[in-house]
Length: 76
Image (cartoon, rainbow, N blue to C red; front, side):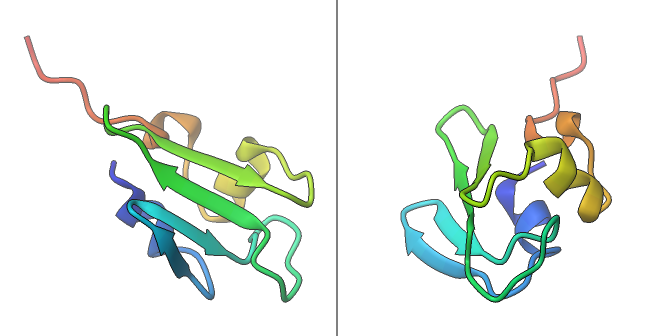
């Protein structure tokens, strides 16, 4: 998965930098962009809710799993 998969499921996404975004957190709602999303060089997607929601809560709210934050491994 790329960050785009997660971003497509979020509301009020705002690009804040190179491969960095802020959005409303789907786990707790609210009007502020408290969720930070960042895609790093190795393809992993990092997320942090400044309200305190766990990554698992955020992913559950949008129908994804923790493994979705990591790039697919090439087949051997």
